[in-house]
Length: 272
Image (cartoon, rainbow, N blue to C red; front, side):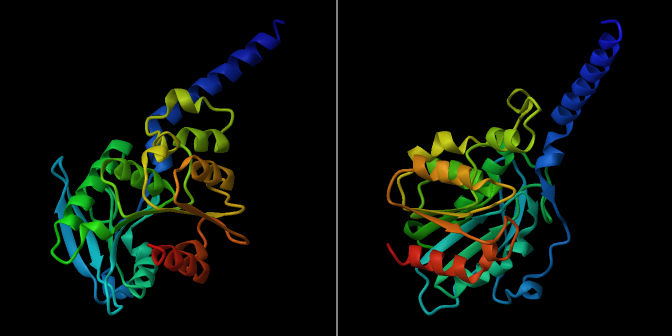
């Protein structure tokens, strides 16, 4: 017993240090912003308008408004990015939507791209509200034709905004049930529920949304397990549609603007 006690004490010390580090640095492990945003023409969006708008807590967010290139603009999409990169990485998605008659607002959260501030769940919620106010204030946007598109972490942002300002439709790519559930999946030995600040409880919120819903997931997603996306889909109200794509992973181009994505999104948007 005397030999076991020191070993146990060391193990507890290491575990305690790990929990403290997780608590202190968790947002650095969750958000991966990138700067150096290119000009829109450099990423295939020569017709994009560079825009900026304020948040309620006095930050200025920057983005691109990408008009539809099709003859008729029926809808406008706000894209809520995942946890990494900047808006330039979503240019293929906006270009794809433009050809189907859908305008798009690409913007960066606080701390991402050329924006000041530090990302957090509450901060991103404020950013989403600011993006919504900006879009519905444009003369060339019909507020009745607003679509929210959330990818990965951005699905939590989009779902929360949809409970506050109902869109015409909601598209969720690789959604998760909650950040607590996702953290437990990747770090099963850590006390995620006890230490996590930003929780994004999407499963608790999705039932409050009544608009048409499209959920897209990769069958073998290594970042957001497909079973979480399916669980969120099952909890949602109708009308809804689930698409499960085989042979691809979370960060593959096919889940950004690939041909299967385009076909499913176009079919969904044409259905109402």
